[in-house]
Picture 1 (tube, rainbow, N blue to C red):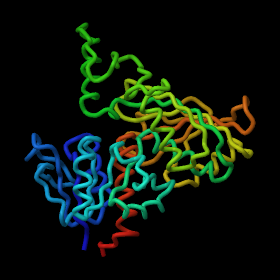
Picture 2 (picture 1 turned 90 degrees about the vertical axis):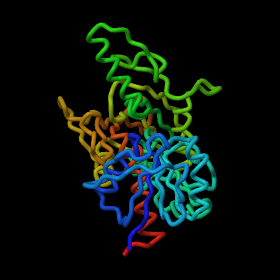
Picture 3 (picture 1 turned 135 degrees about the horizontal axis):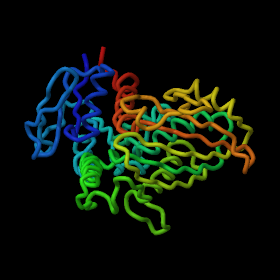
Picture 4 (picture 1 turned 45 degrees about the vertical axis):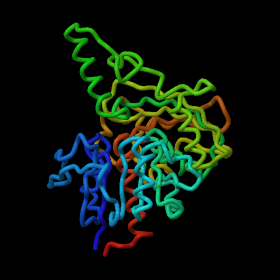
Length: 340
């Protein structure tokens, strides 16, 4: 006997990936329901070799649904996730709304999968920010061995992290430039085509952006509150795939060779690190993949026990949809145990 699973935001880019991954990984579901806003009622969405018709979230009754994966933004999660949870459904939420709630576990399965046990406090589990998820997959195995003191990370985040309309804007601006049409920013504060924008989400009082603050807070909640972390988050004209340049300072000795060995054995990590032309992974090569790729592993000679690495991952997968499905798998195999 399998689960009844609902995907909220099924017509969006992350919801689409969730459905793909549920099918790819053969999640034990007897029924999968695609849910979207009222304007998407009846819209066809793919689930493996099947086609589902979207149902309205406004009228959907979560009673009898075992797991709901939400991928529809904070305002939707704020209103509907507690309703689903109160109906007995366990919510796995991709928005930022519940991430810092002390009663809601914030999970990267390779890092703190055991913390899924805390779901019962509110029947809600939070998925971290996409840039945080891939960072912590790479940091966790190194931290376990040598204890990380400080991290400086610069992110190069694709436009898909801002949704379908942001991807459309990159495409339309690129085309406009080639035909000498006017370029008008809409989804972003500046032109994104052939440009980079050091601004993701709103500015905070300390000068950081909310995206940068999320990385700090989520790292502390998921991995270790004693890690000092500073981030600069940049939007780049890439459709899918987030990249990160990461500088790490350890309490104990860590060499590039030792780091390679640790990361090659770590869950979710794929090391591609040859010191030659093309001996590293770029974002276009990670699209559609599950792994977090680590390249450019080298010593930082400016501090004791310093290391620099390059981390790349498909943000729609490990940064969102895959991470959510992995959480559902832990929930199903270790806690709900409904499937045969």
